[in-house]
Image (cartoon, rainbow, N blue to C red):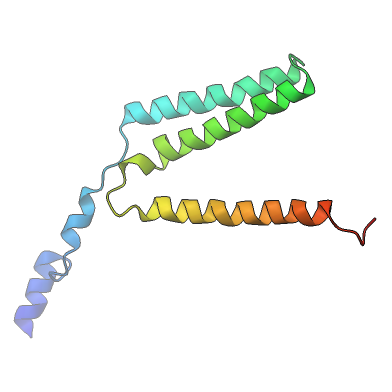
Length: 120
């Protein structure tokens, strides 16, 4: 019993195989700075377009939508490290499931509001 306890205290984890978890890769300072700068630029573009009334309504909405999608992708790649994930890609699968659930809720809500005969 004392030998087990001393082996446990020497390893810190009791030989449960936790040593391999410290090898996860995280982004470098360069990738964080690039992601931060892209985020700033993708935030400033729609602000300038809206505040200065540079486009018609449709063009403004298109700029907002495109920059929002690009901002989402920048966050995933540079800060959430989605492309650096090892196999199996559980984070990517969870993200896709979450997006699918949100899509079903939004499309279903729009469908119900559009074809609701009771409210008319």
